[in-house]
Structures are given as C-alpha cells and as structure tokens.
Image (cartoon, rainbow over all chains, first blue to last red; front, top):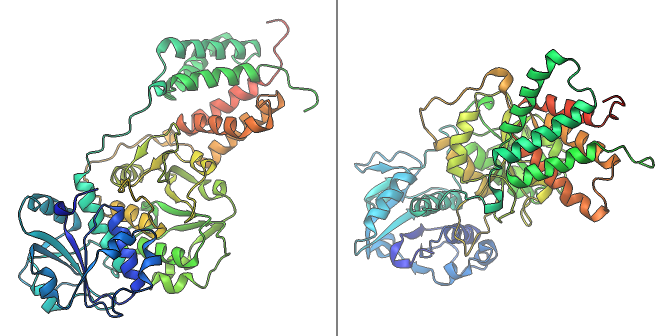
Length: 247
Length: 247
C-alpha cells in the first residue's frame, strides 16, 4: 500500500448519505488510499450506515478526520483538485483523472499534501468550494449521461492514481506453460495424420498434400504449450479407440 | 455515445441484488455502454430495486437481455473477457482494464461481438464460467484489500473502454479469418467430449469436471477461426470412425 505520506487526501465535502461515505472508503482502500477527510457530513459523524457499506474498509472510516469548513480541511494541503461535472467557467486548468494522476505523482515529493475534493451527492461542489482548488478535475463521461455517483467518482480518481504507479510486469507464463518445441508439434502432427490416414481422411492422393498443410497450420496456429500437446495426443489416442459397447 | 455495434456487451453472471444491477447500468451509461446481458439473476427479472439505483439509466435495464446459462449469453460473442480477482491458475492471458480497452478497440471491426463477464457479488465467476472466456481481466487493486464492488468493477472497465483513444489502425483480419463465435466453439467442445466419453476418456466421475475444463481451455486457447473449427470437427468425426481394414 502507498504510505500515507505519499498519497493525496480524499476530501468529501458535505456528504449526505453515510452509505456513500462507506462506499467511498472502500473505493479508496481498493487502490491503497487511506486518508479521508469529511467536511460537515450532513448526518453527523460517525454514521452507522457507513461501516456496512465500507465492506471491511473500516480503518479508513475510523481514521477519517472531520472538519467544519472546506477552508479548514485544505489548510495543510498543497495542490488541491476539485472534482466537478459541470463547466464552472473559472480561470483554472481542467484535467482528466489520468492527467491528475501524473501531476500528483510529480507533487508527492513536495512537503504539502495534495488533495482531491468531491462535492455532495445531489449538487456537487459550490463555486465557493471550487475557488479554493488549484485545478478542476473532470471525468470524461458520456455527455448525454454525466451523473457520476460519489463513490464512482472517487474510485476513478483512486484507480488512476494507483495505476500510474503500478509497474506490474505483464503476465508471465509459468515454466511448464512454455511453448511446445517444433519436435513436439511434429510428433503431434504425425500422430494425428497417421490415425486420420487409417480412416481414409485424405481420400485421394492429390488431396493429401493440401489437407496435410491445413492440419499442420491448425496445430501450428494453436500455439500449444507442452502440456497442451500432451493433452491433444491423449485425445487422439482416445478417439482412435473403439467406443465402449455399454455407452 | 458509442453505437451498440461498436462496443462490448457487459454480461452480469448470476447477479444477486437488483440494486447492483441498477448501479452497473448507471456505470455503463456513464461511459456510453448500452448492451447489458443478465445470466440467471438471482431474484428474477425485472427487479424493482434496479430502476431507482440506475438513477436515470433505465434504458439499459429496459433493453437488457436475460439468459439462462453463460453459454447462451456468450453464444454470439467473439472475444470474451472474464473479470476475476483471484488468480485462477488457468492457462489464459491476463490483462488490465487498460490493456483490455486497447484489445477491444482493435476487435471492434470484427463480426462477432466482444463481451466482458462479471460474476456474482459474493463469490465471483466460477472456474466453469472462466473457461468460456478467452482472456482474464484483473484490475490491479491493492493486494491487501481486493474486494471490488460489482458496479465499481463495471465502471472501471467501461471507463477504460471510453477513455481509450489510440488512433492506430487496428489489424483487420480477412473476413473468413474471423474468430469463431462461442457457439461454434461450444459445438466443437461438446462434439469432442461426446466422442471421448463414448471411449471412456473421463474414466471416473470425479475426474470428469477437471478434465472437461482442461479440454475446454485447450479449445478456447487455440483461438480457432471459423474454418479451423470446421476442420477440427472433421478430424474428430474421422477419428471416431473405425480404421479401414486394408490400411
């Protein structure tokens, strides 16, 4: 998990439903963000509806700090982002979550903590809230249906922050997953051809070569690993047997 | 909005709560995805709890198609992604939502529709579900807290699909190169299993399921095109015959 010094604070401004605070906490912890700040939660704090919705991310709720005003909540922060859907016509740069993630990572070496503010469910941040931010964060949603749920907005921000740092190497197949050698593939091809030949698959001599090429391409293109070649040979062996009478 | 021909289907497999189906619909529409498929929703369909949670994305719910089995739901699909949290130890490539988005955009020129499957809230997809997929989708979450809510998983996939903006022209396979549909692959799998079963391939009942998964992964991973499925069925049919006496 990202250490708390090295991550932005998530500030929920006047959140309405405890359930949404819990879901936001879960979304944060999914991507390693642990510092939640609450400004004047409508139903007070703690809120009994938050815990169940957090589905195990209770530590985020337990350690959440509560503030009376947005000014208090951002007092110790450096760069602050304000998440908004609507265009605010304010002279501030607007970034996507991905651009924000890059900026945040560049800012983490600085002393003052960066933060991302999210407004109340129904109305979003007011212009007075947004004024306190350095940069506006806007998720590029479907222009015909832009109403992002609070926890959904939080998870997209957290996801982009987390993904930016993620240097996970791509999928590495295990060793016995290794691609079959050509020798193993040829063994399979010949086994298949022999059994097919016994059953008249090739029909006539002038069809034999093109059909054999088709079969070999089929085996080749499947990109079998060693284990899969083994399984294929078992299948051919089994199919070449006579059916059981009682089946 | 992305036209429905140019987007993946979102398949919710055995979803439990109507509320979560509604939230998934909202998440889809936020990013312009409109084709929802439901496999055996626990509480039937329609579900009165879905509408309010969709917050205006009712059109997605109204047009959702309901299926009895995962096989039915993916029958007309080409490339299918299975969203999982746990490592399934299956021989399939694993991608992040971002890698999936790039692949999906490259696949949209093809005939068969791509799809992304999500499992039930509590348990996720079963191994039998995952076997039907070409690729595993895993969101790179905090390893200490990986429980992603259903709608959150859907929104991350939809967001990445929507956000992807690479102008690279995709590889366009020739028309009869097109990937076999799941229905064609299932036909091949069942044909193979039936003939093998007649010959005692599965040996004992407790080996049947794991062996069947191995076979299905083998067929699935070969990424057959339509013509190759046809060839494979010819091979099985031929091998299942008795050898000619004079050969």
